[in-house]
Image (cartoon, rainbow, N blue to C red; front, side, top):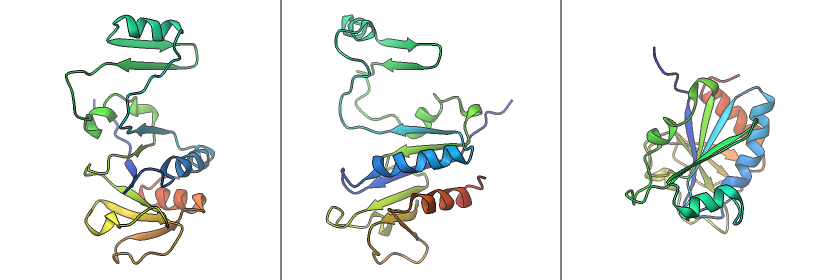
Length: 175
């Protein structure tokens, strides 16, 4: 039995605060409306907590649980400590933890050094260098201006998330 592997696409930028999350917040509902079952893997440079101090799962985690699973009838989350790993796991390792049989598309935020298809976010006043000039995996640039791009790169308007969704659907043969 083979494991189904949906397309994987990363949204990347040269710097933080370029609007990756904001764009994804606009793109996701449009994908859902089209019936595209989507997962998101978000890279963060910070330690993070998934629960609030004082809650049972937080207390158990703080008490020493290396893996804590939160479960309800409609949601579950798994938090795992990885102190032996000082590097971010590669994207394929993370994708392997998803139930890909129930997905049509996986979007990643970050992971700019991975060899996967990417859309670069390039914002006036924030971005300085176009990453697509040195990354053959960037297939489009999403911007609020019209930067000079290599011929093989599609320019998308960051203020038109419906165009971003249309590009994704065409690129990955989705409905």
